[in-house]
Length: 361
Image: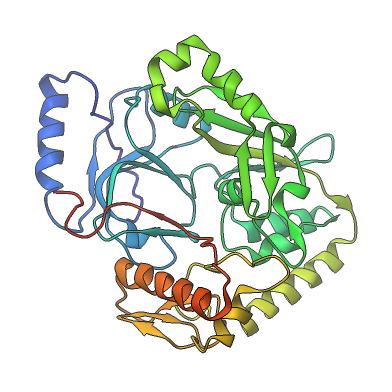
C-alpha cells in the first residue's frame, strides 16, 4: 500500500448512522476486491490513515503473504493513543515497522495492523546527551544521526534492517552489539491507549529475547480497570519510543565504520533478493549458517523460496514465493539440521496469520 493523504475511518465496535454508515457500507463493499487496499474516511479525532484488505506483501521484506483486514498508520504518537482508545479490546492487533523479521501467512491477518514506519519517526538529541528515537525510525537512520552528532557506539544499527520498535522487541543486534545495551528507558503503550515509561529492569532480556518480568506483569494485571476490560490481553504493550545512550566520539570515524559495516553486509548477504535477514537464531557456541551449510542445504528450494547460496541463514524469494513456500522451507531446514546434527534451530522470524483457505473472506 502506498500511503496517501486520504484519511481512513475506524468503524468497528461503534454504532454508526447517517454518513458514517454509508462510509462503512462503501468500504466493506470495496474491500471484497482481492489484493486491493481500500481507504476509508475517518471520524473527527483521528488524523491517520486506515485501509482495509491491505496486501502484506507490500509491507514485509519477503514480499510475500496475504492481506491484513485493516491497517492503520497513525499521524503521530498522540494519534496512535486516540486510535487505541477506540479499538475493541478483543481486536487482534499487530505492530509492524519495515516488516523485515516477519512472515504473514497466505490467508492473511484478521484484525488491525499498526504501521509504525513513516509514522513514529521522531529522532532528536536530548539535553542530557541521550538520543530519543521513536519506534518507526530505521536502524540505518539512527546510526547516521548518532554519527552526525559525534556519538560512538550506534554504528551497528546500520546493519539491522528494521526499525527501533522491532529492535527493542527482540533485542536485535549484530557485529557484537545488541540494542538493549544502549537503552536508558523506553516508552510503551497498552491496548487502552495508556502510555508507560519502563527501563531494562522491567524486562527479562537475552539473546533475541525481551519479555516483561512476571512482577511487572502481575502489577499490570492487578489494575482493576485493565483486568476487567482486557481479559487475556492484559500485558500487551507496544514499544513506541526509546532513549539511547552512546559515548562521545569522532563522527567522521563513526561514519567510516558505518560505511564498512554496510560494505560487509553487501558482500556477505543476498540483498539483491527479497529476504527477512537471519531466519534462525545462532545456537549456543555455534552459527546457524554453518550448520545449514554443513547439512548441504544451500540452494535448497521449495516453490519460489530458496536457501541462499550466498548466506545459508537467509531464505530468499526468487520471484514468486508464497508465504507457505517460505514457511515449508523453514520447517524442512529445521528438520534436516536436527536429523543430521541433533540441533533444533530456533526460528528468529515471527510467523503470523491464517493459512491459505482459512483467511479473510
